[in-house]
Length: 212
Image (cartoon, rainbow, N blue to C red):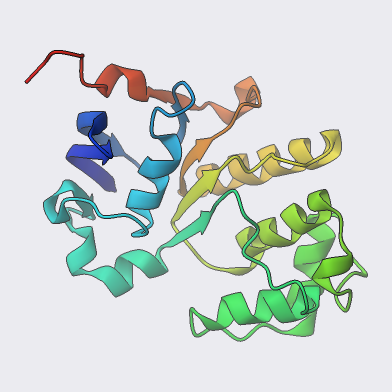
C-alpha cells in the first residue's frame, strides 16, 4: 500500500497543493488531474524520489518510503515526459541498461517479447536516434513488460501514441491492476471505463489565496 500523509509542494513562493492525504491500494488506478501548473508532474516526481518531499509524507507498506529507499525505489517504475533513452544506442541496449539498474539481466527472448507487446518487434538493433517520437515512447513503455514492479508512476504515457498504441497501453494498465499493481498516471487522454480509474484532482488540495 502507498500512503500519502499531508504531502505538500511549492513552486517558488506558490503552493501547488497542501495536506494531500490519500491511500493507494493494490489494484488501484489513480488518474491525477488538475489544470496546467497544478503540480501533476511534481507529485509523480516526488513519489519517484526525484523531488524533495517530507520524509514522513510518503509511506510504503506502512513504513516511511524513503527510509527504505532501496526497497521502495525497486518497487516502482517512473516514466516521465522524456523517454530517458540514449539516442546513440540501440533499442535493445537501452532496455538492457535500464534493467541493469535493478540488477536485472535481460535475455534476447525477453526483449523480443516485450517489443512485440509494444509493436516494435524487429527493432531490437535499431539505433534510437532513427526512431519516431511514437516509437521512442513505445521503447520506454517496453519497460512495463520487462521490469518487475508493484507501482507505476506514468506521466502522460499516451503521448505520441497512435490509436492502437493507446488501446494496447490501456489493456496493459488494466492487466497490471487486476494482478494487484498500483498505478498513478497523468493524461489528457480520456480513459475508458474498463480502466476503472479513480480521480485525484489536485485543485482540491490547492491553497486558497489569502489563507495562512
